[in-house]
Amino acid sequence: MPDSTSSRVSLTLGSSIESVDRVEQTAQEFAERAGFDEDTVPNIAMAVREAAVNAVIHGNAYSPDKQITATFETNSDSLVVRIADQGAGLDPNKVPDPLAPENILRGSGRGIFLIRAFMDEVHFRQLHPGTELTLIKHRVPAQPPA
Amino acid sequence: MSMKVATRQVDGVTILDLSGRITLGEGSVTLRDTVHDVLAKGQKKILLNLGEINYIDSSGIGELVSGFTSVRNGGGELKLLNLTKKVHDLLQITKLYTVFDIWDNEASAISAFK
Image (cartoon, rainbow over all chains, first blue to last red; front, top):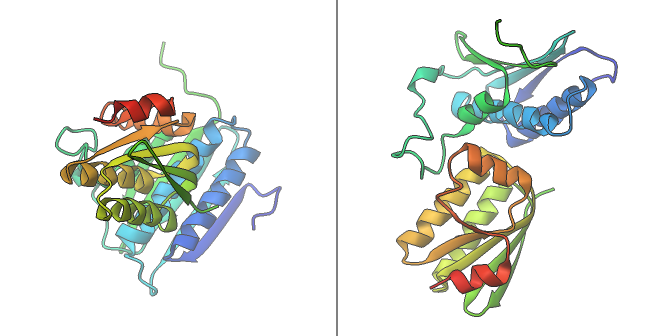
């Protein structure tokens, strides 16, 4: 478990649902310590959970030979979470829009949408192999340019 | 906390009282199996009481949608009852709020089944 005073923790975990639960729990703890309000903390935890689910299922395909890494970092203005897998890679531009009428009744495909809905910034980086998602939540909402 | 299900019958409607979390793995599988079991018994009026569901992820949302389409394709109806704020907000942002028939009063929901 992360030390209560840590500002950065990195976890390397197997490709399992238990890992997803642990990543979600850690995200919740970091978000609480970073001072986000009671409505925002569960949203951050959910976004991180969805990223971990993607890494375990779609990235590593539950492979016992592959791991996910989850890095949590708080700084003066943001919580930054990075989730990486060792899978074949993900092109975010090819993920179907779950709000499109033809997709609205699909039984899956809403994870990345929810990540984007709940975080301020989401970045994808292709690894070799794998994908890294960087999820950022600012402590104070960014002000629009004057 | 995983998801728990209690089943009861009221005026020909099968009410599933769900509690806990509907997430990837146990929760969503339990929901899927329960809805399939109810359909297999020929019960086609299903009311999902989500009043004690405190957490749902994208897998759980997907399972609600799959349950909805399975029941509808089987000639039945599936309605939702007592959404928590969290579930309500998630259905709003995923534009599913208008897909489901959602009620906050059990008697009214039961009356709404054809």
